Image 1 (tube, rainbow over the protein chains, first blue to last red):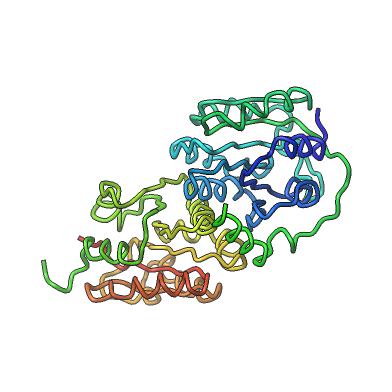
Image 2: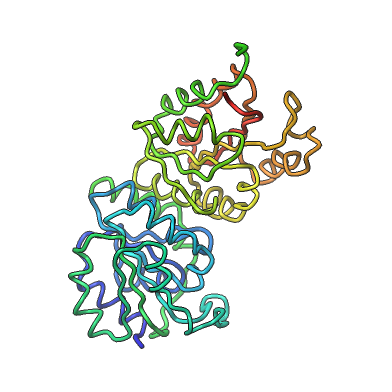
Length: 188
Length: 169
């Protein structure tokens, strides 16, 4: 089991110029761990991260889009797996932060926590490539390859909360930061 | 066909004139046959099919962040199912989500709020309560509303809905 902030720190070391979309706890921590104008946290409603990321990937096929989704969030938008597989953007990397809980909403367990095979769901939906990691070493080792491969790719990251970071929902959904993102992406 | 009848080709012309390339869609019985199927065959459009309508609200927002215009096609039932995404993503998130919504079951020539069909009757009041602009398109001349509505949505970064009152031929 990986700690989420350590997992994000590993990603930061490999990150080049990718667009990174993140939801809830991963989004909160991303703004502290790897601040960038190409961070997209403006997802607005639970479950919608994978769909925002799809719009970005289709709109900018020249750029890699990496999503840090939540397991509760994905369960709320499971059909998006099929939508994404059908649209088949090669630049789409769908990382799932599987912590087994609705952490932001009081850490209540998700239904069938720890017993859902998310990679099998992604495969069945049509993702051509899937990975599953439960330790930082493997994640670190494979990440460079994952960031080069054709997608859509699904990566299940088994994790638990790590260090606590300050929450700022206003920042996550800020129109000002969204507009900064648009400007930065235009120049990128 | 009478000149006043709503034609799919006129709607498509307006959509193109508004600079739309991406069409995100979940089939709607009012617009599927003549409009969506034609759009799917047209190389000027890239159609993204979704499994549930709220996905489309967010895909359109992602496309906007990436610098593109898009249109979400759905039935009014899908709009009702997407109210929370419309609230958080489109309205509070200030995203110019442009929706083309079929009013399945609306009686021809009857204003949506006067429809005997409950779901159709509440669409405009729901959109009004959410502060989302809407435009009723039922006759041929109504298609002229589409381009200004899309331009205004993008200029103001606010969502809007074009309500299709009868099947375009």
